[in-house]
Image 1: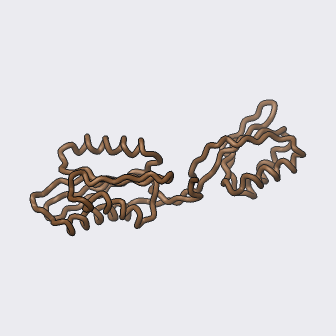
Image 2: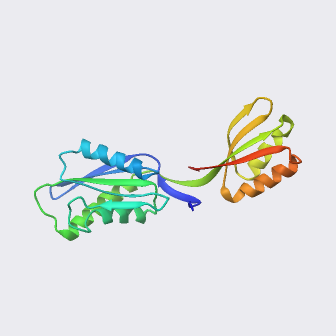
Image 3: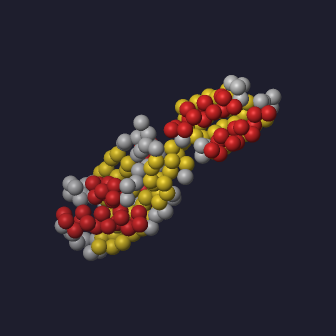
Length: 207
């Protein structure tokens, strides 16, 4: 079951800082699936091929999440990056922290704090957006019922994304799942059943 709303970042963001000679480069990406997260991770590994560590965490709205210390002491990197993501209550996000070792060992506590600070810093500088779940609906009606589609869509905060006109009018609408049954019932009643409504079982999150 997908959540009705999520918070994520709008765009990619990068930030870096140094701690006792080590450089920590934090890069955040909005991602909506595990494959996208892994692809970005591979890109960063190639770009910063000479870095000491490529630690990361990602969290997807479907419940998938993963993190990696990439050779750092257990519990100092990946879980701290994930903690930062959860602190901001974000999902559909990948956060990578690249480390260039500066020659001075930080110790477990300060190292974990450095990864957490790198992560929170890049998120503080990111634009966070709230997205709402919508389901795609296909509607076909005769032309004389078009005004009803617009009125009911407006009443139920539905989004009409596409309209096509041939022998009939065809609409592609995005509706909050909680409003779908009411949308169907009202339009069926207003058109005396002279309407075709198809639930496409396709979902997307919109701002």
